[in-house]
Length: 205
Image (cartoon, rainbow, N blue to C red; front, top):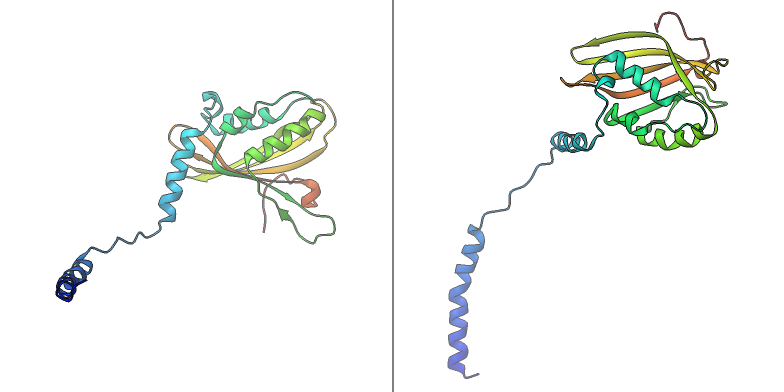
């Protein structure tokens, strides 16, 4: 390339460089998005609620009907298919089911949370082989606003009129959303895990 042309190109480059630097410096910086876990959780919940199975209106209109539906839907003779869609419709998205057991040789209780879907998958196999009937025997309800805590004593049998296999207590957290009742969580333990019979009054000091 002839020297005059090289010099001209260099001059153009030198003149353009400051303009490019100025343009880069004046370009707006991309906005920094601050994570908002609570907002994200609310959006996930709204989406999950839209996909939740529709309940039977009579199942979710009151505390009594909700708990009655729960006991009813899981109970039945061996080989009888349970209505797991109805079962799932009782639970709020994100609900957990938490058995409290006492492992052999363990000094304390062990909690093992799982989802209603996990329960349905496991119980469907078990109930195909043996009957399971769970009946509420007593209930204590307390709460504040639309938040309710229920302690529901129960007994289980393999046959509806057969001998009692176990007794225990379900601890349910419920919420009323203005239209229906939901189960938020259930924890439960039986007399074997607790080491004592179910008391007549639920107290713990």
